Image 1 (cartoon, one colour):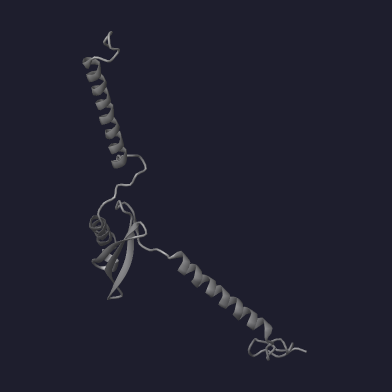
Image 2: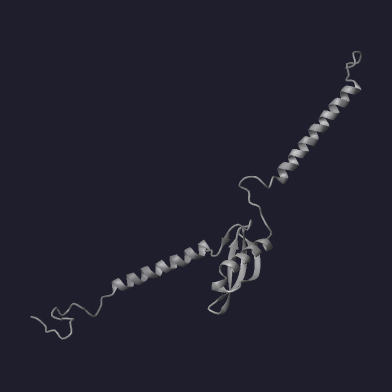
Length: 163
């Protein structure tokens, strides 16, 4: 500082400017890095394109299941509920059949079948209700025939009735 005016010298101002500039650049770099993220973090999934995941699944199906279903053909792939829904055509009993299978977005897991929980639960509840209604209806009506009405009936053919 200048002794007479009590103000910083040009050399001191340049030093503070350089330090501030370096800290600002470091701060911007840290913010940018945190926004972009690090794709190699533990627990993070590497997402691949839907076409790449479909190719992995098709190769798997054609290698593992080809003897049973013939060669599978890719019909389409869309993203659905955080997975890739892959429509394939396979042969079942000599007829082509479209089937939806799923793959994780990293292409690591193949999910051959899925259930819509709410639809399946509704179907199950309807089934149970029908079974209960049938059981109640059957228990409430008396039967006209009594299989035990004749105590002397012998079910063995050719045997005499004992009295």
